[in-house]
Length: 518
Image (tube, rainbow, N blue to C red; front, top):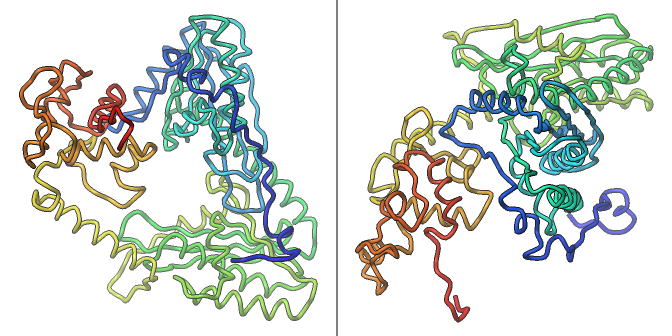
C-alpha cells in the first residue's frame, strides 16, 4: 500500500530506536565474544533431554553456591495493538529474592521484549555483592545470543549496554562468568508445588508481566461498570483435544455488576479461532438488544477473531462476520454516540468476567453424534493438512524418496525423526538461527558434502583421504572417529549433531580458496 500526503503522519509509526554502526565494542577482536569467549556460556535447548529434571538439578546447585546470582527474565507482547509490550526481571541469591522490576517496552517484537528483559537482568545482577557467576534464565536463546552481539540489529542499544556492562564486570575479576540457560516456556505455569524447582523461578517473572495486565484490566472494568450506558460482554470458545467432542462457544452479558444474560452452545467441528469468532458474534447480537446502551465492551482472548468479526471478506466463519457487520451497522445508524471496544484478555489470567466465561464454556461437553456436524473451512483445511503430513511421513520412510545417504535420526522418545511443516520442521527449528550452520547440517545429513566419500562417489578430482591420515573421509568417520575433531557418540539425535557442529565450526564446510576466489 502506498501512502501519500499528511496520512503518513497518522499511519506510519516513527522509529525511535538509534543505532551505532561503528561502535567500538563491535570491532573484530574487541567484541565481548572475542575477548571473553571462555566466560560466556549458553546452555542451549537439547531435543534429547528432558529439560525439567535437568533444570531442577541445575538450580539446586546454583542456589547452594553463595557466589551465584540467578536472574529470571521474560517479555510479553500482547495480541492487541491497544497495549504495549512489557519486560520483567527478578534477581535471586539462593532462595532469597533481591530485586524485581517490570516496565513497558513499547511497540516491539517478542525477541526485542525478551532482549530488553535480559539487558535489565544483567545490569541488576552485576551490582550484587559477592557474585562470580550470573545465571540468566530465558525462553529465548536467540535473544540471549543477540544480547552479547554488538553489531547493528533491532535492539542494538540494549546489546551494547550488556556488552559494556559485562566487559567492565569481567575485567574486575578473572573468575567471573555468565551463563544463559534455556527454559521452555511450556514449563512456565507451575505444574509442581515445590518452590525448589525451576518452575517457581521462571513463573514468577512470567506472572510479574501478567500482574501488570491484570491491574490494567481491573482499572478498565471499574470505569466501565460505573458507566450506566456501557454493556460488558465476556466471550470464549473451547476446542477439546479429543475428536470425540465438538467445539463450544459462550457469551455472558453484564451491565455494571449485574449479569443480564448468558448462553453457550455447540459450534461443531471448528478451529479455536472459529469458536472464538462464534462467541463474539453471539455476544454482539445479545449486547445490541440491551436498553440504554451506547458502548459495548467485548472481552476476548483472541484479538485475531475480534478483527475477523468486523471483516466481511471471504474467510472461515464469514457468515458470523457478516452477521456482526449487519447488526452493528444498524445499531450505529440509530445513534451517533454508539461505539464498540474489543478488549484483549490473556487466557492465562482467568480474569474476572472472562474467567467466568471460560469456566462456563469448558463445562459444556457434547460428543460428535450420528447427526450431521457443522464443519468450518479452517477445520477442513486443518484436517487436510494433517492428512498430507501423514502421507509425507509415510513417503519419507522410502529411501528412494529421502535419499540413500540421508542420516536417520530419532526423536527424544525413540521414534524416527519425521518431516513436518509445523514451526519450520525439526531440522529448521533446531538450526535455522544460523544460515552457515544450517548449510553445514544439510550437507552432513544428506551426505552431499565436500568430503572424500562424496568426491569418490561422484568421481570428483579431489582428495579422498582425511587430514588425520585415514584413507577415506566418510561422514561416519568425521562424526565419531576422526582424531582431528571433537567426537561424539553415535549420532542418534539432532542434539548430537548440534554438539558436533558447535565444537567443530569448520566440519562439512568448504575450504576457502587462499587467493580469495570463491
